[in-house]
Amino acid sequence: MGTMTASSLSREASNYDEASMQQSLLFSDSLKDLKNLRTQLYSAAEYFELSYTNDDQKQIVVETLKDYAIKALVNTVDHLGSVTYKVNDLLDEKVDEVSGTEFRVSCIGQRLRTCQEYIDHEGISQQSLVIDTPKYHKRYILPVGETMHGAVRTKSKYQGCSLDDEDEWYQFRNAVRATITETPTSSARETPTSSVRETPMSAVNSVRRGRSPSPSGRPPPQRSATFSFTSTMPKKESEKRTVSPHRFPLLRSGSVSSRPTTPKTSRPTTPKTSRPTTPSSAPAKKRYPSEPRKSASMRLQAEKENNKDAEQYPSKSKRLLKALLSRRKSKKDDMLYTYLDEY
Amino acid sequence: MARAGGITNAVNVGIAVQADWENREFISHISLNVRRLFDFLTQFEATTKSKLSSLNQKLDTLERRLELLEIQVSTASANPSLFTTS
Image 1 (tube, rainbow over the protein chains, first blue to last red):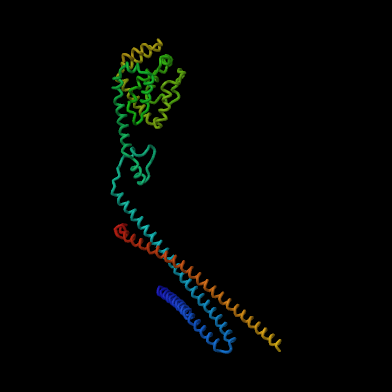
Image 2 (cartoon, rainbow over the protein chains, first blue to last red; image 1 turned 90 degrees about the vertical axis):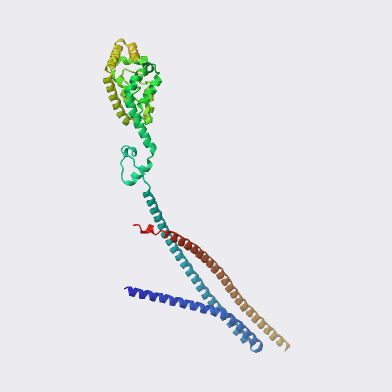
């Protein structure tokens, strides 16, 4: 089969060569005829001129000259037509060849671009293998609830993570630990005059700061938790609040996040729900949308710390309870304030 | 006799004039066809020149592109280790 196709191809090639040779021979013959036609016309003109002057039968010479001129013109037109057709065909063929060559060159260019892209890709892969990607723990990179699928995504997460985030996390963790460890000592160290005489707005700010467990929340949330409650209350509200039987929730209301999140905190005995702490709680909640999840742990931690305080200072808590009970009986804040002054 | 000779002369003159006009018509036809042939050759020359110029331009462009491709191939094949890695 291979020899048959090769022979057929060779025959086709030989036929093509023979046809092209025949065409080129015909073209050259027609060009030679055109060149010879000029001399023939000149010689014919001289002959007819001589015959017209010498011969007596001039009419016959004229008629013969007319016939010859017509035939010569037609022959010239034929020759020129064939030559121009062949030249035009040759030009079209060359243009087609050039178009085919352009196509081949564009194909070669495309292949070369592909090779270049491959080379670039290989180079990038080689260089990327050289670079050491920093490795962090997952909790420092991924948000909560998101899972990782594939190494590429892991790589992109690693690239997206920066040292600032890690620093912030580290600072936040240290701040939380510091507040947790400082809570008993700072509460004990807190002077009564400063806590009692604190203005409501500053108390609100302290409460807000304590309730917002943001990473940058440096002031400890527990520090103002025990004192801010008493200080935030105006006298009228405290009087009204002494009527309510929920006294321990009052103390617990000093915790981090129990008051503002639930609408139940507006107790039935206190008709004024717009306490100075409540309006500030809404923007704080908006400012930290992930607060409830984090404040839960903070609240638990604060309760634990409060329990520790209660264990460590039972006498003080008893005195505080006594003061509150006496306050309920007498409906006056003098004892509480005296106790707080002593405290 | 004189009248008959004048008539024949007039007829001869008329025949000669007619023949002359026929010859002039023939020459005008030939010259018109030659001019048409000349116009055709002039037009053919113009079209052929334009085709040849466009062909020359294409060939120049192809030559430059081939030179560029040769350079790119030489630069790409300068580091054959990239192609040997599997």
